[in-house]
Each structure stands twice: as C-alpha cells, then as structure tokens.
Image (cartoon, rainbow, N blue to C red; front, side, top):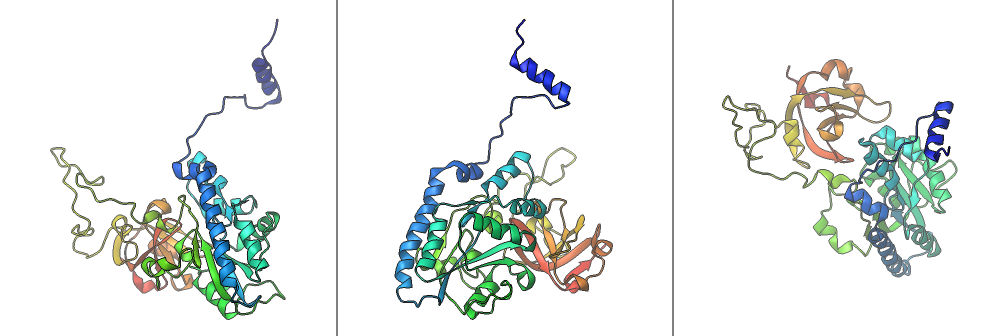
Length: 371
C-alpha cells in the first residue's frame, strides 16, 4: 500500500511531538504597507528624490570649502526601511509599542532604501559630512550603528534621542548643535567643527525644519532645493491630522432614548463636551491637534517608564485615546496613587507622537483632580 507524503509527515510530526503541518492562511496587508513593500512606484519615488538631491547638492557644494558643511538625514524610512516590522504588526493585528520597536531595531534588520547609500557616498565625495539624526533611543544605539555599517553606509555622526537630547523629538536642538559645533553625544575622542547644513532629508516635516517656527507655505520654495522629502504613508505625525470627518447623523457614543431613537450629533465646535466645565472630552481633544485646550476625563491607566516620560491615559489603548505625558516626574509624586481611576481636568497644547494624541505637562498645577 502506498502512503501519501502528507500522511507520512503527519505521523512523523506526531512521533516527534510537533504540531501538524497546516496550509498557510493568507492575510491581506493594508494598502500603505503593501505599497511600500512591493511597489516599484515607491522605489521610483525614493530613487528620484535622491537622484535630484544629488544633482542639486553638486551645485550647492561648489561654493563651500570641504569639511565645513554637512547633509543631515533621518534614518527610518529615509535611508533605511522597516516595512518588515510594519508587516509583522499587521499580520499579528498588534499596535506599535516601544518594546516591539526596540526589539525590531536591535535585530539590525532594517534594509537600505534605493538611492540612499549612493547619495550619502556623494556627500562625502563632494567634501561634506553625513550626519544622521534619528529618534531611535539609547537601547537601540549599538544595533543601529551596526545595521548602518553592515549596509555599507559611511557616516560622520549618528545622533540618537539620548542623554541631553532625550526630549529632542523635533530634532531642533541637535540641528542647532551641529551648526554650533557643540554636539554632546559624540563618541569619546571624537569632535566635529561647526558645520553649515546644506541639505536635509527625511520622511517627516520635523526632519526638515521646526514646524513651530516655519509653516509649509514658508518652506515650500525650499523643497527640491535644500529640503528633500521621502514618501511614508505607514506612520508619522500626520496620522491624526485630517483623519476625522464631521458627519451628520447619530453619534456613536450617544445613549438611546426610551423610544430607541438616538439624538443627532452636535457640531464639534458647539458641543459642550463637559457641560458646565468649559472643557473638552478626551475624544474631542484628539481632534484639536495644535490647540491649547482644557480636558476633563477619567484616567483609566497610568504607565511609568524608567527612561522617558510617564503617561496618564484616558483610554486603555494609548494609540486610540488621549494621553497626558508627564515630564519632570519627580515633581508629581506617586502618579498611580494620585491619578489612576480619578477624574481630572488638565490644560495644555494637544500634540502628537507616533500617531498618538497627547498633552505634555511638566507642572502638577496643570492637572486638577476633580473626583
């Protein structure tokens, strides 16, 4: 009697205590990840950007003395790609977290993006220095430097969000220190002179200029000249801007009346989110990025970190709700005892970090416990 290979495999797995072989299931990737993972158009956008940047840099460098200038580049989704990390999140149905991100970075598995390595080599060939300013943090530093070296990138400095730059998410301080020649996190024995920044490359606006001081309209003439933007539809500061659309009809969170009818939604501006308090609900505040607001809501989760700020979350999922991010933590005392499960009123500017809405607070007086 002839036994099929599938039966043989099943018997072998049983004898060895292994799980049986099953046909692989398929999961459709979101369009943003699929585009960056497989589209030639994405690769063409990158190659085009770096080809154009190279031609422009040749013109700019003619007037500069070698060793006195630099090009600053972001790392992730600018010179190296992490689409495999994003694919893994999508396949598992999980959200981005600092733990999963650090684990990925420490695998040193990011890949070189088209045109990036050749452009960095051109910078040095023309007499400039290659400065990478990344928002990766200290726990991933060694692996990131190794990853870049293994891919063939030659850099003059890689600056992380660490030490005195731990809160420099917008990269403003590090860019200023490059220009002044006062970088504080270079390896022992290494120094760089003050450097003129001829060009900046990145996938987010804060990689290119200080958004609090410069608007898009003020900067738009510089794109393709000394600002080079790379496409990234997977994540970024933009993810909370313009995502919400005001619609007429029933509110999702409105209770039904006795007759089963649901009252129509009020407009965002006229809705008294917290009647009598002059404050917004956390959900409404998420739609007010860039505005100074007062928010009233219950803290359902307090998260503390050994490195970086702590957070008071109005939602169990920090990515899905507003968080109050606490800096200068020593001023606040025991956060869990003071705020967890309590209704608070907080005032501050709504900002974003990795697609999550937050209000940064460094003064306990900004948080009032209501009940």
